[in-house]
Length: 548
Image 1 (cartoon, rainbow, N blue to C red):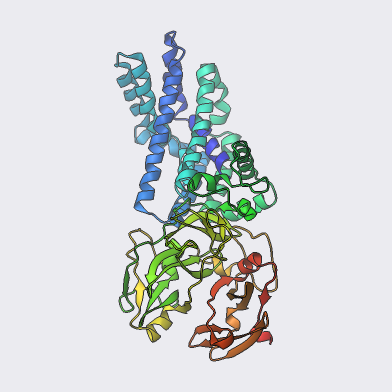
Image 2: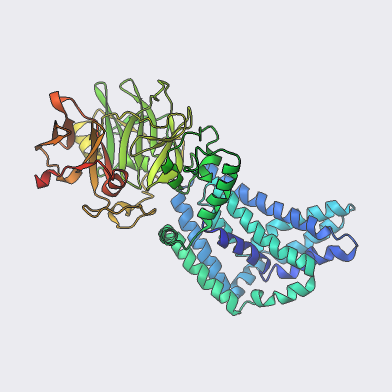
C-alpha cells in the first residue's frame, strides 16, 4: 500500500500531459460561457466515474483470466519504465498520440456533446466520453495500471481512488482558476523541463524495482526503519473507529483493518494479541485460490520434473502426490485421503509443508482458504465454516470461534518427483487441471529459497543455522523440536530424549520416520529455520544428529 503516493502523482500528471492541456479549456472553461457554475463539476465527476469504471473493468478482466501475478509485476515494471522514457523523450509520445488521432477524437466528442439539447446530459456525456481519452492520451496512466494489475481487488480499488484524487485535485484547480491556472502549470508540463526529467528518472528507477521484484525488499527495509507510515496510519485511523464501536477484544488487541474488512464472519471478540502483527501479503482473501476439487493423473502422465519436491500421503494401498510446482500457486489443497478430510498446505515464503486434519475442534469439517495475510512471513489460513484464522506453521487459531485450539497433524513424506517415479509408480499425482490458469512450470518465488533476503523480514534473527535451511519439526508433550533435514543420513537411526521420553529418528529410502516410546509414530512437518525459530522462541529443542 506504499505506492499510494505514486498513484496520486500519476493522476496529477495525467492532467499535465501535453496532449491533455490543450483540451482543458474546452472541457472546463468552455462550459462556463453560461452562468451555470456547476457545469465543470458535472463534467469532472462524469470524467472521473468513466476513468474508475474503465480501470476496474480492466482489472476485473485480468483477474478473470488468471494471469500469474509474476507476469503483471514484470509487465507493470516495464510499463512504468516506458512512462519514464516518454518523459525523457516527449516528442516520441506526442507522435504516437498524433498518429492514433487522439486530438481529432476529442474534437469529435466535444462536437457530439454540444449537439445535445439538455445542458446536464451534455455535461455528463462529455465527461464520460473524455475519460478514456484522458487515460489513453497520457503516458502516466501506465503508472496506475502498473500498480493495480498485480494488486488484489481491494488494493486495486484503493489505488485507482488515489489516482482519481490526484486527477480531480488538478482539474478542480483549473475549474476554479480557469485559463490562468493552466498557464501557471506550464512549468510542469514543459517537455524539456527539469521537473519532467526528474520524474523520468524516478519512474525508470521505480519501474526497475517493480519489474525485478525488488520493490518489496525496498518497502520492507523502509517500513522496518520507520520511513513509511501509511500502513500504521491506516491501522491507527481504523483502530480508533474500532474502539469507538467497542469491537476490539480488549485494549491490548488491535485487529488490522484489512482482516476485519475481509472476514466479516470472524468472531473478533476472540483474538490472540499476535493478530495485531499480521500484515497483508499482497493478494487479498482467496487471492491465492485453494484447490477444493483436486484432480489426479498417473505418475506416467504427470508433467512434473524429477527435481520437483512433492508431499506424499498414503491412500489405502496407494499414494497421493502433491507437487510444490502446483502448491506454489495455490498453497492449500482440500482433499480426502484414506478416509480423512485433509488440508495439504505449503507456504513458499517460509518453506513450511504441513498436512492438517480438516476436522474442526467442534467436530465439524471445513475446507480451508488462503487469507492473503502473513505473520512473520507465514501464511494465515482460514476455515470457511467459521472464518477462524489459523497460523499455518503452528496450526494454532489466532482469532475467531476456535481461538486457543490447534489443528491435528497428518503424517506425510517429502520426496522428489524422481523418487516417486522410482518407488511409487502407481501413485496418483495432483493434476494441473485446477480450473485456474497458471504457468506451473514457472516458480513465482524462483531463487527465494537460496537467497539471503526476505520479501517480509522476520522480527527475530537466529544465526545458529542458515535462515532458509529446511528443518524437520515435531513436538513431544507440547515441547517443539526441530532437526536440520540435511543432517539426517539415509539408512541411519538417531536417538534423543525429550521430556524424559526416548525419541527415535530414522531415514530410509529418503523417507523420515519419528517414533516415541513403544514405537508410536510422531507426525512431523518441514519448515525453514528462520520461520521455526521465530515461532518457537521459548521452550524449544534443536536436535542436530551430526553434532551428537
